[in-house]
View 1 (cartoon, rainbow, N blue to C red):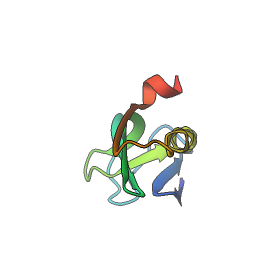
View 2: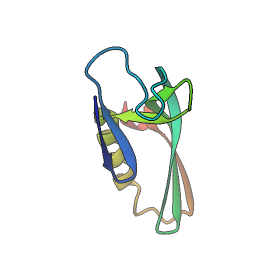
View 3: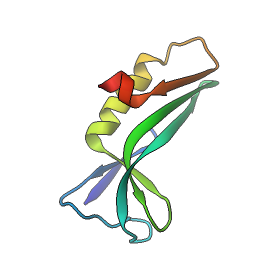
View 4: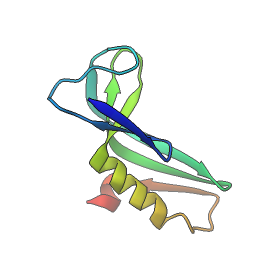
Length: 94
């Protein structure tokens, strides 16, 4: 298992079905999270982002394919003139 940090996202490459948290070695479980980005005075909240979340410490990790789609989604809305934008990942990526 390896991780890459890219634009504030922790991207996880998984080699098997079960994974341990790289922070505390706790068990990871699939959930959805809210990803919040504060860039240039604009806040974007992306709801329902698929991630692995540690049952023990709460650290979350985003799979590489999800992170790429999330980055594309954030780039699409980066020129928005609103101060706070809320986007549903599942609706926009599906």
